[in-house]
Length: 409
Image (cartoon, rainbow, N blue to C red):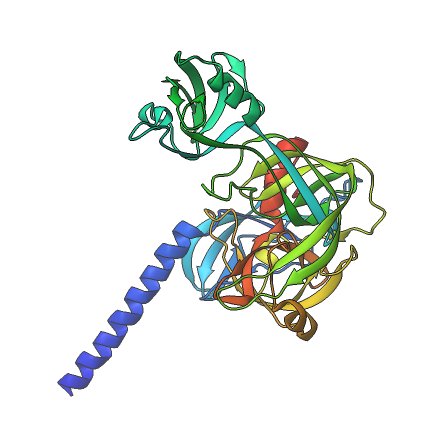
């Protein structure tokens, strides 16, 4: 009997510790405020059942003539584990869902950096690297040389080669902070010019997928992740950029350990949009011509659920197709700006042709229950049928920087 009692006590202790751990984790990880569209669910899709219980009857959506306005009052609520155990206080804001035009069409991305990006430092002569000795590192952004603003790697090379070995004062940006360093170029007997031991980059280009266009403003979002330097993996500082129309001409099928890739041809040199922001949640800007496609409502992050969904993407030509996927996991952590969703491709046609998600599909809209919930961002190298997605609400939070208004509301 004593052994049975101890066993029951041990099980009770384990359950109690598990519940305490879950309460602590969700209390720290879950957001304090939740937008929910009219008719949307107040149940958060987590590993354990999490309910958002309003303290009083929820305020109805605003009847303002602006179709995208929100209720001005927030409802106090409590997040509860299994609908019973208190986790934390929260706010519920019922809002008319923003209407966006879903993308799915391929776009060519052209980006010029602000200044020039340092890819790596190298020796000019045996054991001598002026840039490295001055403290310059891969990922640094050189914005000026001797007071002259830089906009191309060719101009920086010219300044260094014509230095005659005199010190050059560089202004650099590192992790958002500006500083100055002095670099003294040395003469390279091999090349017959002065060098600083720098490998630099000032531009990039590639193919991605358009996620959305805001019909009222023409603001667009694409990719769902930043444009980064391929060598340093550092987000490229935006000087200027544009998106252009693309036709997909082929693809490499993805396999385990070897992600596939879409290939496209830029249709013309005419920009279909200007890029005004390159950040963790994607690239954003303004279209140069309006879209005539129909808009659909967004789903706020609290409304996204595990289960069937579709993605809009283009694997041939320029016309998007809809393919079936399964949302396997939803992460509502307030710290997660991207990689909020895990999806698995279930569509037989897409699996047969591309093996699942391939490079170039980044930005493909994810649709669930007729609502735009997010965008594809990454493929799992070990399993091309699966990948990450980002909440559309998080992309709209970033787009707000260039619009000056709350696009998610």
